[in-house]
Length: 419
Image 1 (cartoon, rainbow, N blue to C red):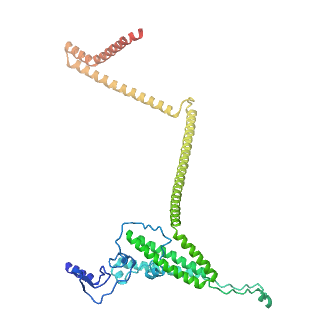
Image 2: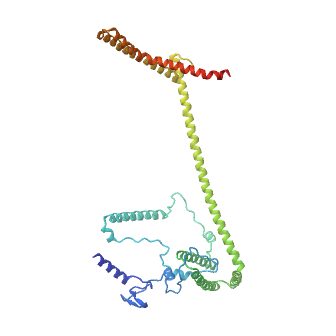
């Protein structure tokens, strides 16, 4: 079933879709033959980018990989603004967002919530706009209650009235507006050229078309200005026009203009980069100053806490000296150390005494048992000798080894002392 649906969609797209000729309902077979699938067929609307890319159009040339258009003779290339604005749609420069279909919204619960949210936002926006319009409306000035109105005399009123000047059609303003439209057309065309990547051959062909359009539009403007201006203005305009042509004709002026524009562009680029660098350096300097300030504050707090702790310790030492009548050199720490050492030594002495008592008691008990159990004197002497050997001999050997070590050490040191 899925395959059947896919084939059906492919057939519908082949019938209703545009082909490379911009035509609906035509399919190409072998050897350049065409078969109509769904008459009557109609053409796609004209588009600048598709005409540049279309192989059958008059302006077609192969696309290039260049990302920049080298337009060094910008003053020679002008665009017919009237034709360009006719080609562009009315809503080209206006951002519009189409609302989703209501039927598609109500199928999904989440989309339904989104539609309610959008509707509430629209209502809130409408209320805000109404409040703004109410605020913009100028309230009517109420008449003052305690002010007397003094009426002027008729001849004074007539003298104060100023005669209104008749509005004259200013041709200079018309020329300025035309030039502004002119420049706007150049900007739009440059954006279009940047979007589409052209080859050098195509660029040269486009420049030729632009120059021809410029000549036509210039003649049209001159005709309108000659009809509107006076004879002396027309003569001065013709003189300036001839001078302008001569200036354009000379290649030296073109080269100077190109070099001047390049240097100005480099200068502005350098200045913008320098400005960014200075701003980043200022930000880094501010961060460094803040870090130093925080460090100084932290050090000040630490020194204050340290001084407070030292003062508190001194007060405690002084109070302890007065309480226990100690020396001036003794501190709390030394006093506590002495107390701990005394307590440890006392406890150690007591533990040693207890251990000695236990050992003596055990020895006395053993000797009593031996005396009671053994009757022979020789056996008793053997046991006593073993005990003495196990208890006293290790200590005696230890003392003897220490004496030997001391004597050996002294015998080694004596020659060095005599020398």
